[in-house]
Image 1 (cartoon, helix red, strand yellow):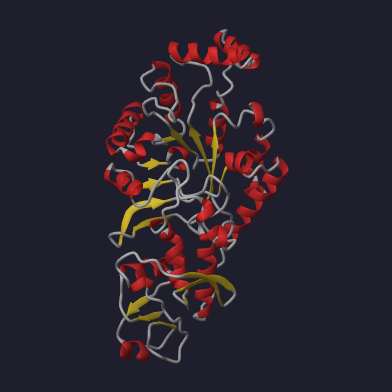
Image 2 (tube, helix red, strand yellow):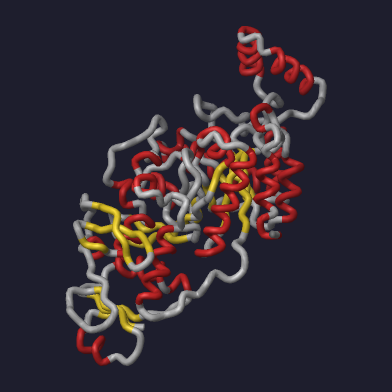
Length: 421
């Protein structure tokens, strides 16, 4: 297939690779009108030239080098919703805008953690968050050229992931933290926690100790990944010290059976040296090169956080999603290379979007267990239809049925069984 463009740019190639190459469709992008017209085969005109072939009138977005603030509105291309950019309905620019998270570069909206909020996104405004909108648009572009869309073959690969923010609720905490925590429980008359502390001190199982369950899942699902917080203690980073020998022991033991990756601390998002220190610390514990990350609190800022990760040697990133709502922040469940909008270069950092997080269902969206199961199934079928990996997040403290997580293991179990339906 030949695709005609007024100019060949990195932005255009990146977008067309997502549309065609990721679906095993070969194409040749050219700016030579005569060569394009003389070609006998499938053609797509994405240029200002008027030619009697399937034509998409381009906006300027994929031919610009800087970051602008285009007027973005909802529009339609064939049977898919997409964007109009400065008044021009452009499905290719729509994909690029969502996939690269363009809107996050041009807004000053931040939540209490410095994150781009779901409430400010066009994905909320246009009702797209639970759709693989980039893939939906891509399918329409492919069909528009006269080609058949290759339907997603087989079922999506399940990728269970677990964030280890607090390895244990009570075990191995230093004496100072134990003392103040007991005082706090006493002041609040929280007798249940006081009893739990004593029980764990006597040798009973810590309520956050669900690592045997995680190992079972890791044995059955080879793509299982852990993201471990080993940063220095701070207000938002409250795991057991990574210097504690028993903490080091459980990390080593788990890393021998399940892939352990870094959960960069809250503080490291503004401190590249802290990020590098945590990476080396975890590598020393596991004996493996750490290349995957997911940010604590899903706290990242584009392009700063991703650039820091690349500088520190990371090649895979698993934070692409919203804490407030399930769905597809990048408009896809497909792993894709991060495009740095400031340099207009495709990087070697692969972004792995996730579909849902445990806390999003229970704590943010306030769904019941049954509602959550239904919602997860809907997300799964979207990925099964449009391709990609079904990545989802749980925590070691949530899968054990502790406190307001009682019964929620059912949601995890039903997710793990989706491929068996």
